[in-house]
Length: 376
Ligand SMILES: *Cc1c(COP(=O)(O)O)cnc(C)c1O
Image (spheres, rainbow, N blue to C red):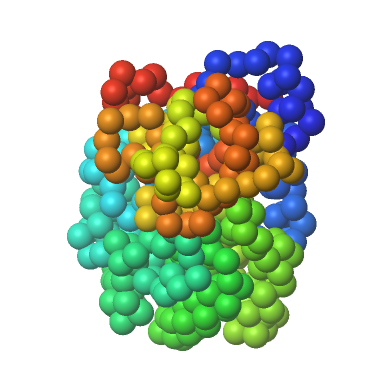
């Protein structure tokens, strides 16, 4: 928790649940990434947290932006971003969204299939395009599965055709999975994609860019490698494969930029046991899976939780949300322990919840309002 957030909580005592985020920390994270990968251009993945205050701060830092929809493109433009600083990085775009973005001056688009490339050729003629390659997501706590990316062979034939279709075959991209906890995943992906890059260059395609995606992790309950370890591993791998003839490097961090800048202040609604003899207490908070904690599905992302009784005796707990839905359980199998003294009415903090929380909150499921947000 940053001092600014601590002061806000103490002085304002905001109604819970709410997200409180320190925008200065966003800037620090942006600068840390810039420092460790000075040759990479940072495209902030807007979907991680599209709050206007965050986008504005990043515009002030000359950040670039990775947008997943036309609505996100608009949000970036409204925050002062130039259209040339926006990449439409979703490989699944409606024609109307492609046309609208192109009309606003966006000229960089991702694709991973023939049909999407044809849509781009028709509705964003002349645009710079990059093809997303399917890579292993091993080591990622929130993998992107097989929903995105294509094989090296297919990417090769698509990129060879892009020029003939009036597009500018600009680069290749990959994503190693979100909350990627190993540097090795980047090394393997860079090796795979660099080979294709060289191959296409030799075939006469004027490729200029390699997009390394996002995935940089945040410290939740468990430790993760420092950002500099990712920077070192990436630069070493890039130099190994390209020598001193490096292509332009793009990265698309989302979680790393905003995750640890915010926390959720929540209230304990109830503490009970299924049976008095049961050692496990059930702790119900006023936020759950439907209030924004979607990434607790499968107990994938394990948030650290601070309570007013920290430092006193602990015991095992299951942690759930306030709705009447049986899926609204955050943690039952991940060996969470909380103080025995915890009781209803206590305020708790779910730490590092600045990414992938506010936008996942449902619209009034069980009557609960979407998560309140404060940007300091
Ligand atoms: C979600 C996403 C990102 C951001 O990923 P993080 O793990 O939050 O860094 C970057 N690029 C693309 C294409 C994405 O879909």
